[in-house]
Length: 241
Ligand SMILES: C[S@@+](CC[C@H](N)C(=O)[O-])C[C@H]1O[C@@H](n2cnc3c(N)ncnc32)[C@H](O)[C@@H]1O
Image (cartoon, rainbow, N blue to C red; front, side, top):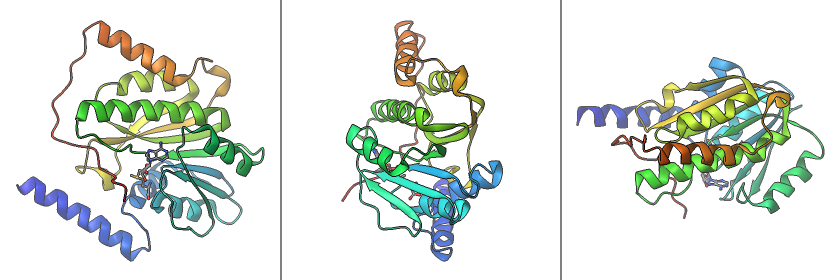
């Protein structure tokens, strides 16, 4: 009960701060804290914000890249305009929205991909977590070919089965890969952010991340070494409508 109170109190505190700072969502502080720690976004950068609704991360990204930068957001849900950002509505795995993004990029490479994507949930933790991890792998497959050498990829992940496998498959694409829990997301869910720095396209395997990920996960499951840990945490649910 006491833990619950502390958790709710923290959430309210970030919510109040978001409102006071003019941010649409308390999640804005997660990106701000990631930025404070790693200084990933720079003036003039091209940033892709995956799962951008309601626009908190896009607001932070616009502040960081300034007038010379470009922020492009994609979400299943239409996002109210954010000054200085281009916001697309659609599924990031849909070839139509992907080609729309290419049009907007107009030949430019992306310097930083920041993904806070959370799929809708069924309520069954194992299924939801596994769907979320596969979606993250798909975002890597879509994003990596467009990410500049030296670029950055930040993605939310949900703790559980497949995290280690996904990290192993992503590692060859970057010289630095680490997990980070911003203060604003601690105790609120089982989310953790993967911070991938210095994209090294020349060292990466050609097989898509999602294929390698599913294969190594399959091997682990067939080997019956799986140990699904019970958890009381849930996805931070994003409900439409
Ligand atoms: C936690 S919210 C993102 C919050 C956002 N970073 C902010 O600060 O305002 C996660 C978002 O992922 C989006 N999403 C889930 N699956 C998606 C998909 N396949 N394509 C695009 N967006 C998706 C959801 O619609 C939801 O708005």
